[in-house]
Length: 98
Image (cartoon, rainbow, N blue to C red; front, side):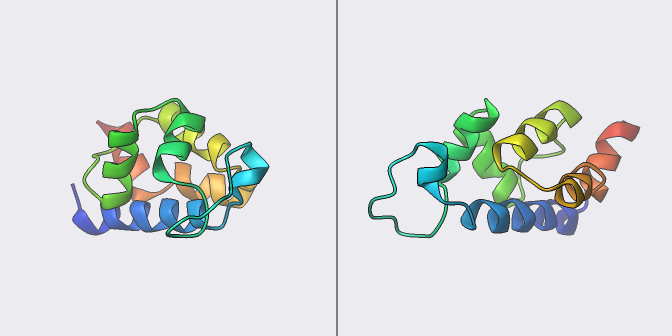
């Protein structure tokens, strides 16, 4: 697997996560070290393990299935172009070829 593809996916997910307001999702806004949702909160919204979501953001989670990408897209409330970018990223396409 191409490491740059893994990191590109992680960078994309992180950027989308950081722009979201926790209160919009019913999470306490309070004091946070970084803006946006926590990784654990995105994992909860996507019904995946926090560890795996963290690995995806860190570029070491491997190629997630289309179903997982769809759940993450819904959890992050991606726009249609963002969702298509996620689903048709090189890492996602590689997964479908396997």
